[in-house]
Image (cartoon, rainbow, N blue to C red; front, top):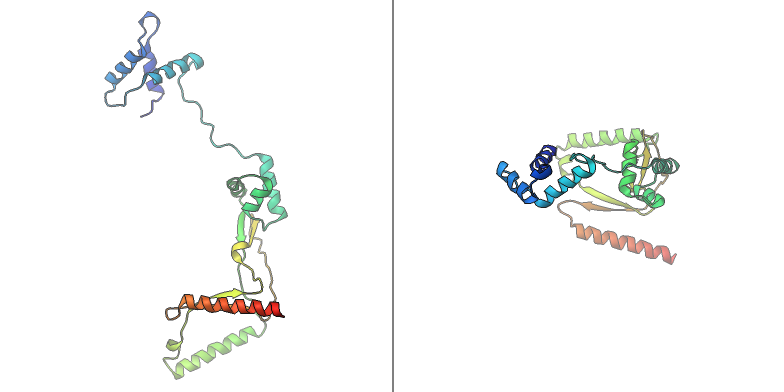
Length: 225
């Protein structure tokens, strides 16, 4: 158990003054006799307490410095980097300014900057609403004619791989204190993509193999052309 200020003062009183001073060994033994339930103090501890009192005039703990504060100039540089390029990453800012990534993250947190990520949505054309209504009516009519129609449909998850450099949400962010409602448009009538279905009756390895040969063949055809 560490010694508090009261314990140190008690040790100083045990040391004494003038010709009635005790040795460090005697002080350690006396302290242990008065506090048998505590861990014995060492002679080096007694010596350190006595030396501190002679040098500083007290035996209080030194004030804690805490974590070093972030330089104001560095903080301004980080904010300017985000203003000039809202799509920057913590790693990029850390590399450009030669400061730690944790410092960059702490500055963004301090000034309440949040990395808003893009949300992928489909653009609706004028006739899309009519098509959706027609599809719902089609499904309802067939389900009324055959009660097991919907139950016989196999629904499964799938992973779609775009071959035209489609946006990746994991690598797209916008640093800002408020939601910028930033929008990025992609105009593609027929995007080149491959889909890999994933359900209980289809092997994931088999689908991956099909996807690999499909992309590989597409690449070869592109080079041959």
